Length: 367
Image (cartoon, rainbow, N blue to C red):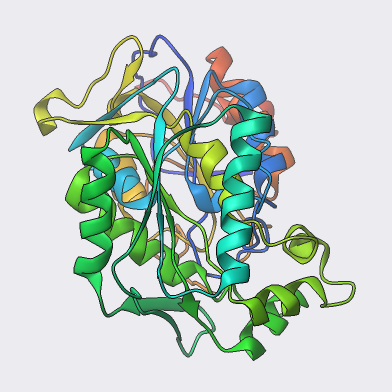
C-alpha cells in the first residue's frame, strides 16, 4: 500500500460512506462480469455504514445478493451525484415500471414475464406495470480497438415515450430491457474469460439517456433473442465469472431486486450538495474504491475537488491505462488487492491513518 498527496484533516460524517465503482465494458478482472464484484462490495459493506455502487458492480443475472446497506445507483445519476447536482434519498421500496423492447420473439417475452412474476412472488417486488415500446429501439454494441465496448441506439424517442408512460402510471423506478445486437463471437470470448462484456457499453448508454431525462432510479437488463438464450445456456463449462449467465439469462431478476430499494434521485444545487439523515450528498462520501487503471472519470475528479480519499486496486486490472501517477492525483491509496482495501477502510472508519500501520514510520521534523 502507498499513498499520493498530502494528508488533510476532515470532519467525520455521521455515517461512514464508501463508493465502490467498476466502470462498464473495460474488461475488469473483478466486476467485468455480472455480479462477480459483489463479494468485494459486500466486504466493503461489512465495514462501511453505507456503500454507494452501481448496477454493473452487483447485477448477477437472476441474482442480486448485495447487502442491504448497498445503495443501487445508475451510472449517469452516480456521476451527477459526484458533481453535486443530485443527492440520494433512501426509500423503503419503489414501484417499478418495466420497459420491454418490442423487437423480441415469443420466447424472449415469456422469459421476461416469468422473471418479473418470479420477483413478485419470491422477492415481493412491486411492479407498477409492464410497458412495451411502440417499435424496436434498435440498440447495438460497438467494439473499440482496445477491446472495450460502447454502443448506440437508433430510436431513442421510442424508449423515452415508453418510460414517460410508465412514470405517468406511478412508477418510481424504471427497469429497462432492450434487445442489443452483438457479434456472438464477442459473447463467446467473454464467456471464456478472454474479452469484455459486449452488452455493457450499450446498456450504459440506454440507462444514461433515461436517467438524464427523468432523474429516476433505473437500470438495464439485456433482452435476449431465442438464439442468444440457447447460445448462453449451451456454452459448456464457461469462465466461473460468467457461470451465472450460462445457467439462465433472466437478467431482469437482479435489476428488479436492485431497483426495488434504489435511492430516490433529488435535484440539488452544488452549494447544497451536503446531505443529512437519510439523504446523502457528495461531501458525505468518505472514500472511493475503484480499479487502479480507471482514474479518468467523474468520481475521481470529484474526489480531487472535495478531498475524498481514493483507494486504487491494482489487482482489478482493466484495458484502460489511466493510473493515479499518470494523472498526478492527490489523496490516493494504492491497494494491491481487495484484502488491503478492507484494511485501509477499517483504519479510515476508526480514524486511524492507514500509513501508520506501515514501517518504517517517518520521523517528524520540528519547524
